[in-house]
Image (cartoon, rainbow, N blue to C red):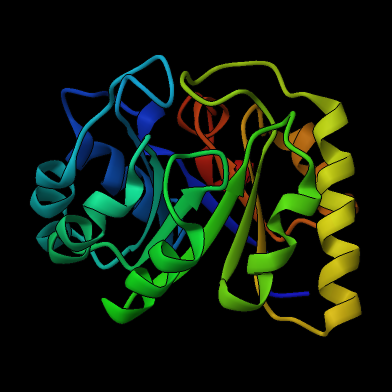
Amino acid sequence: MPTPIVAPSLLAADHGDFAGGIRAIEEAGLGWVHLDIMDGHFVPNISFGPQVVAALRPRTKLHFDVHLMLTHPDRFVTAFAQAGAERLTVHVEADHDMTRTLAAIKAAGLQAGVAMNPDTDPRRLLPYLDAVDLALCMTVFPGFGGQAFIPAALESVRFLAEERQRRGSGFRLEVDGGVNAETGLRCRAAGADTLVAGTAFFQAPDRRSFV
């Protein structure tokens, strides 16, 4: 299993001070920031776009783990690559040719990820696992931060962890949604190695102790 990583979601930071959110992640001693990109179509919310990512890129050396919750993620690969993303994760439920999108992400020099919603059959990810660096299991329905963790989603985490072991693969297994100190342990036990924490991280009295 890859080394565990906590990737705080900037969606839960002060939207008037994203640079301050970046500093908080750095001060906690972490190396990743999770950037949730929402279009108001694939999910019922709008967050921010490549301009914000480009504005933050010169301010930090954090790894930009960019999660595209977009109806047509393939149309934005170049924009986010130019903005400074290092990893793009796209949803299997979105309206695009997954194989072509993953190839475009790789061709842009980025690491690629495939994501699934809590009610999606994890077997839908199987054709793509050999082409990705990360598989993301949503543990809430995407769109808004602060939601309650869905325990049933851990079955998908276990399924993908077993599949990773069976294949001898090295892709990271990420969870996103309702992750806190307690649910994070359950995700780790199920096989996840990359934990996206938003509200729990930014509201923690001691962020260093949270991680």
